[in-house]
Length: 216
Image (cartoon, rainbow, N blue to C red):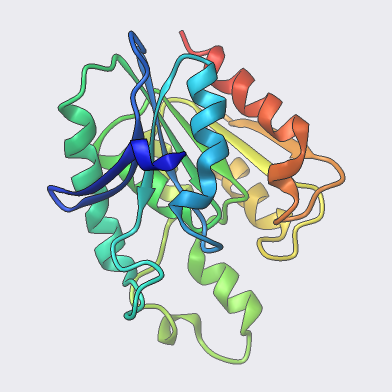
């Protein structure tokens, strides 16, 4: 049960923290739009079984009466960073799913991570929005853009995981992130999956496990 891992309003932080005894690595997960942090419990079990501690971040205002603002969610990454900095871990892994790749990559610009894992990322949120609603200028629809390809360059190691057939964030958006980064990141295509079925594919979890366990 996740109730043992709940953190509520710890200096403004909400989510689930699963500390593992003697862990040297902590994995921080910024989830996508679908569902909430509590729907990502498999990450707790996956990384916990590997001997890593896990923090599932819940966005302030997410799934509540008022829609969360992107600029406030970006600012919230500093709260997460402060929480992590006070903990005794020697390695940090940031994971971002879909729109969460924007928050994970932004986090990496002010708190260097040993590894950044981007799952079905876009290079810029405005590019994906423009493609989806091509009749309107994207700048009118966004308060704040998410510059994943630009921000991810702050990380020394990046891995990208994509679904083979993704209509929510088509694969060419993730390819743009790949080609923008130097050195070129690891790029993993999970065959036979789409944006929503990616997370039930055993190979997806195998890739995640391999990325984290190969950390020096």
